[in-house]
Amino acid sequence: MNDVIGVRVRPRGKSILCDAGDTVVQIGDYVVVETQHGEELAKVISLEDEGPSEDRGEELPRVLRRADQEDLARTMQERREEALSKCREMVGKLDLKMKPLASVWDPGTGHLTIFFSARERVDFRGLVWKLSRALETRVELRQVGSRDEAKLIGGVGRCGYTLCCQTFLTSFSSVSIKMAKEQNLALNPMKISGICGRLLCCLGYENKEYAAVKKRMPPMHHEVVTPEGSGRVIGTNLLKETVTVQLGGESVREFPLDKLEGGR
Image (cartoon, rainbow, N blue to C red; front, side, top):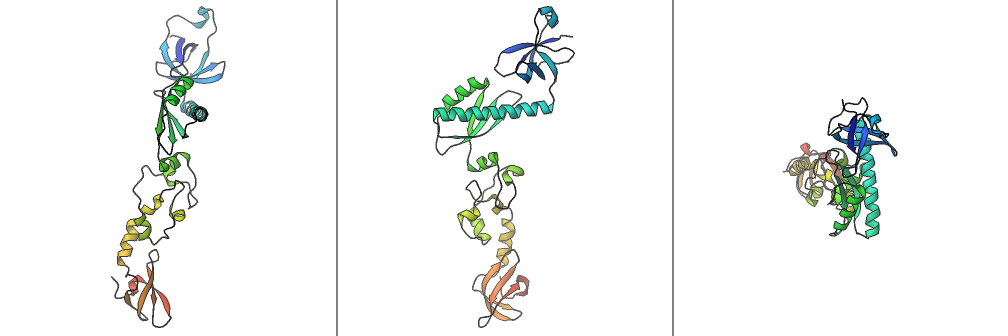
């Protein structure tokens, strides 16, 4: 069994020889190596045939173990944070009008993808080149819209719960102001918009049900017959499925929709 292997800590970094000891590895495996910087994740890129490390007359970094999911997750998090921090630093130095939001590291290829938002088109070619050299890996920058920005950053919605786009939504459906009108909501942008500044995604969750109930409701100012006599519709409640009717004189009563006659 070969006990000397070649590994690479960074995707484009310099390859180093390590003493694998009794750890059985193959090319492409990830291992945890003890280096002068502490424990680091490295990818096996070669299996040496030059004999044990003691025959070389030099002390090689030791392979501590094969990497597990926890090692991979921790390293991914560290590299994401490092990439985002370095990107923000360089954006400031280059005075680019953009906001780095999040980064994703692909352990298979070693590529880093950094997502950013910007109000206008940004020439980030120089930034990509500098980041690739600093991080010793391939870097890709992707601009996202306001909804994707909220999904990447996260937060709490008006309902008091974690944003839907950060928990269970896998795609963004079309939401229109017509949905707010269907649900008799006040057309106040502050009340029907999410933290992304766009219309609330939840407007579309029950829109079909609201539309179906609204079709059954009598129109405003329509004459209807109630258990207490005829009257004029002055309001509706879609959630409760009730109609507010002004009877003779100043009497105003609320009736269940199914108790009225003369509706739709």
